[in-house]
Amino acid sequence: MIIPAYNEEGRVGIVVRKTLATGTDYAAVVIDDASSDRTAKEATDAGARVIRHRVRTGVGGAIKTGYKLFKQEKGDVAVVVNADGQHDPFEIPAFLRALLDDDCDYVVGNRFSRRELNMPKFRRFGNMVLTFLTRLVVGFDVKDSQMGFTAITREGLSKINLLYLTDGWGFPNDMLIECSIKRIKVKFIPATWSYGGRRSYIKLRPYVIRLGLVLARGWIRKILFSILDFAANISAAQRGCNPKILEESGLILEGPTDHRVGSMRHLRP
Ligand SMILES: Nc1nc2c(ncn2[C@@H]2O[C@H](COP(=O)(O)OP(=O)(O)OP(=O)(O)O)[C@@H](O)[C@H]2O)c(=O)[nH]1
Ligand SMILES: [Mg+2]
Image (cartoon, rainbow, N blue to C red; front, side, top):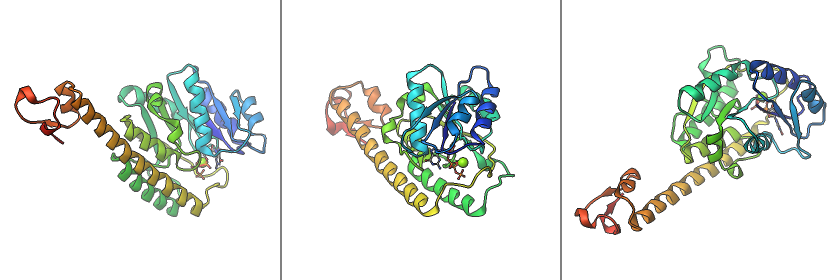
């Protein structure tokens, strides 16, 4: 369980305790993002292992540190739960079940599936717009683009290039973009969310600018990857690959069977 935390004294301890109470084989790692309060002490006392950043990186940077650690160690699934108490650790088993049952590698909580969502109207509207834009970039149905409560399998994470992901706001969007590029199957499941605890750190204008940049960069990355993918398929075809590969890559073969492979002239995208 990866718990990114920045100045979450008074909240992180409860989150760690709840997380560890949810499953006997869970390990909780709090990534303390250079907090100036007693976050690290509280997390350690609650039973978590604490990794402390010397310099504050932002929520994305904290999660990336957790993912890097997970890659080096054992475990089948990396779950991310925020330290501010807005996510309910008792829902973690539902995330694990979704990974097992639904043949997917990345599960994201969906706050909007529940009617009693206690979210201010302007935030709900902002989320709707960002979710719509994220959907346009990734090309699949996104239910909640800003949700930090997630679970990913080891195999799924091995395909994600952490270098491409932002350190700050927009990390959930970047993860979805990476999943769409690497063809990692994503599922959204209902999750509760409480709006309270502490005041939000989000400042509207920098947040919107940051998200705009993340989405624009992701869109460009996605286009570049599809061009590279296409070029790789063409070059494989030119090298005389199996015609089956050509079919799978969406290239339709034309011309007499004997001359099918090896000539670009017989390929129609
Ligand atoms: N805001 C912020 N959070 C950080 C940072 N580094 C780690 N975090 C942790 O990342 C998690 C998500 O941050 P939040 O500020 O709660 O973001 P959010 O839940 O998307 O938005 P809110 O509705 O404002 O809570 C929390 O557990 C934070 O403690 C950072 O530099 N800034
Ligand atoms: Mg929060």
